[in-house]
Length: 209
Image (cartoon, rainbow, N blue to C red; front, side):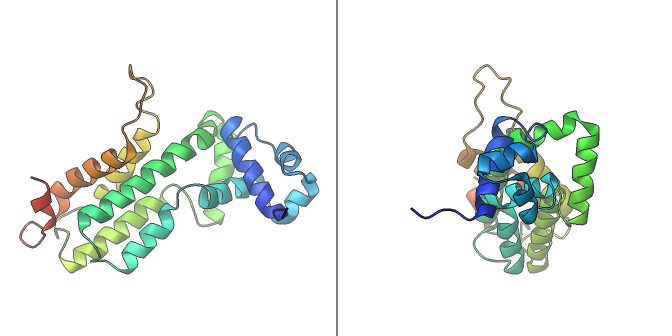
């Protein structure tokens, strides 16, 4: 039976522990133990727990950033509704899976500050997806598929903000059930389109009625 490389085992263990006990309580010592290696070996692959957290988000959760880069590089492919629905679906799943891991950051100010500093150093952070959606929408704006009057940054913030809210806003309802992700993503995309699509030229809006 093939054994996984140590770096992969460490990422797997970090992901599992961050999900089950939370980021604050998932120490490098416990992660190394779960991965079957020493803490010193862990630090040969990852400089800190903060880097591990960022790598878990990037490699073990739904891949939102590659999708945004691909769409921005080739705007005009598919319909706006299809693209925004796919963005919303990936984002909703990403936030759903990352929220249980990252929630403990907001309970400890020093922990969050340390993670924010590392994310800045690594050129990443929760603002990056908003920038990515904004970049994609501006590319579509250049093609005339998004209205020239549309505030693309605000639209990106609204889209991803709604996806993030889905991760926790419905837990307190009587049913305690999140809206199904595919239906949620499509409804969100259609509603956003109603405000930003270029009406004279876009054919996407014919699909909204």
